[in-house]
Image (cartoon, helix red, strand yellow):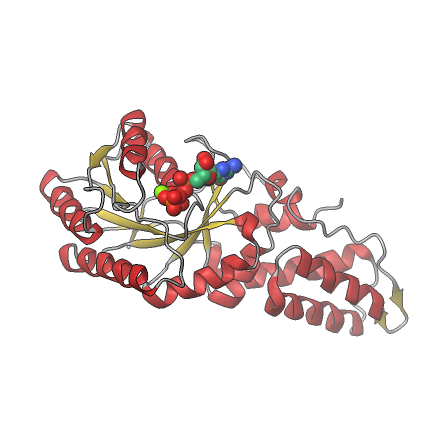
Length: 308
Ligand SMILES: Nc1nc2c(ncn2[C@@H]2O[C@H](COP(=O)(O)OP(=O)(O)OP(=O)(O)O)[C@@H](O)[C@H]2O)c(=O)[nH]1
Ligand SMILES: [Mg+2]
């Protein structure tokens, strides 16, 4: 499959350095290796930085084993052991840019709970694609929240994207249907389908999402080329539960991690890959249309494990 999106070349290490406190000033190494207390501190720090239980145990285990083999004797070596294992966890993310159609429109479906930044992320993505010279259609599939259609329309106008209106209170699957028809007949390059925020615990709304997805699949071969789950990085481990629930309903292919400009902890990137096999593909770093980065494994690893 073709790829639509180039990675940002500039490494944004600083983004991740602010987000994770892994400064291990108190690494104590005994003759046998790293001592218990250091391992406990490490475990606490990883959990506090949102690495999640599974990845945390894997990382602490790895450090312990390396220490037993005499490979971790100093703070620097501990960091090296950790970063090597995080790199292994994030290996599937190294090439994780956005997939695109070989022919015909590329369709991205954007999903997530309320207020995480779906509509803003669509605006950012559309902006980037328009700047790249693509024709972009944004479809207002959030027919639920008052003002949602207008919010997206305003973004579309500012960015120079085509806009497909949904009827407030109407069927979002009908919007998806119209959007697919319009995209094919107009020869649009990329369609971005907005959806209403929904709690993953609401079965009716999750069913509705399934229907939107089904319509897209039926209308355009190979679509949706990406189903992007938008997650608010400040919500920590809650995001994992959200991702799991959405993944059961639609085939989530990647994550847009928003609000990394705030006090969020970036370990969630590792938790998502390790526990949900979900790569983070894009990172939101503000409210403006330019405030989005592609996720770069190397910048992430260097950022979090750099000497404090
Ligand atoms: N600081 C910061 N704010 C963001 C980011 N992304 C979105 N926001 C803000 O988060 C709020 C919600 O954004 P929306 O894009 O409307 O979120 P949504 O998921 O579409 O919300 P609903 O449609 O109501 O479910 C807005 O105030 C955005 O400006 C980000 O990366 N950083
Ligand atoms: Mg929205």
